[in-house]
Length: 78
Image (cartoon, rainbow, N blue to C red; front, side):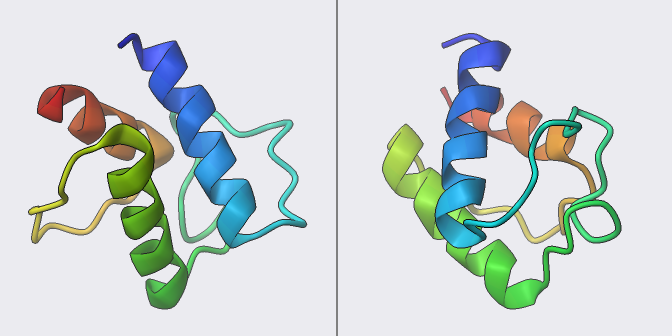
């Protein structure tokens, strides 16, 4: 699975969690908190959505700061 495919899947999950989110300017460097307004509950829902979407488990205690960190983590699990 390519990083582009992971990014596309992550966007789908983000829209499931926050349907009104504008993803047109989202990139690898986008801050989950500052740019996307992700709070702890949203991050939990995103994690669960990604686990289902990508058939993997999150076991990272370090919080993700950017979209790119989430993509890299998922890619490393595949």
